[in-house]
Image (cartoon, rainbow, N blue to C red; front, top):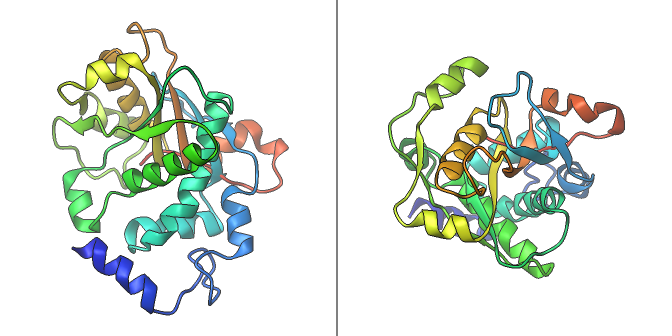
Length: 251
């Protein structure tokens, strides 16, 4: 219900840019350029957690991009999911080589905790993934979202935790729902999330998917992931190639 009211409110209340606050625009031209105006890049956090798949991000998590993600995630600016989905779709194209394949492309969102979803009134990564799938289909890539990951045990709030603490907090926390193994084994899988910081969430998601046969044989290490934005430090590997920053990743 909370999500419906937010959608209705967006139709009748004055609109301001989710990135810079400029009036009369859901997302102004400058903030759109920051979010998806530069080619997505491969990103790597330091230290890089074991098992982290190959990750591409649309933008760096700073300035307007940070403001847009927070507005969507924490303040319920749900219409921004369209622009964020476009950015995520660009990162997915980068990680998959820009083309379709023999079967549908499965976007598997990294799940938030039930507590976080209840507090926010929506699932940010899931909503952005749906928007990205629509964008990919419009471009001729048969993509769909399959939310087959779930938390198997409670985890602590990630805010304030360092890289090693986050890895310990999430170790073994995710699993594939019953029946999801057959689906993942048959199709191409890309893990998706809104933000990459330490990479702990994506590494744990990749472990769960690989254990279910989603990347071929266990230990094959062929996982792929895409995010809307990543921490600026994760872009250091390509920093000299960038005049603007934009990325995608996990909580």
